[in-house]
Picture 1 (cartoon, rainbow, N blue to C red):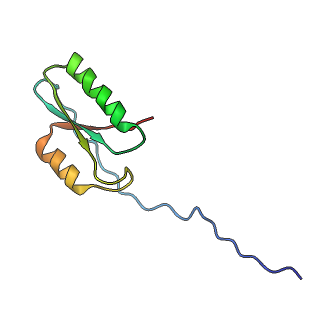
Picture 2 (cartoon, helix red, strand yellow):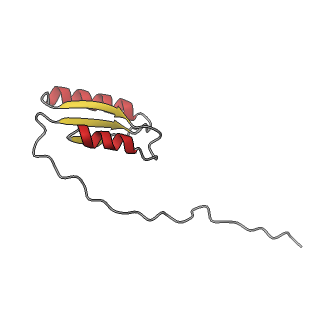
Picture 3 (cartoon, rainbow, N blue to C red):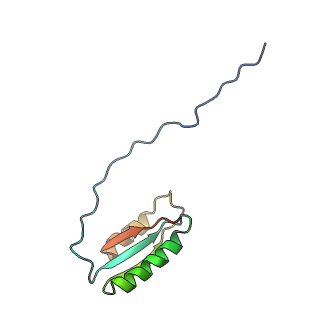
Length: 97
């Protein structure tokens, strides 16, 4: 008689999430500081370098700063989010590829 094999479903159950509202839209960008957040996803740093150049060329009155998120893209980084809230007018989280 063949041996009985038990298999488990590797998909599991998705975690419960709490929805959050998006931040309010800025009236304009002149004189504002925009943080470009690098989540350390594949090539996101290259994308954000190019984005920073586009801002400098097309929106010279906007200050940008590239900030590397601590840890990998899938991990939360409360210190970075606190810094962004305290110092920036807005943020863009860039994903590469």
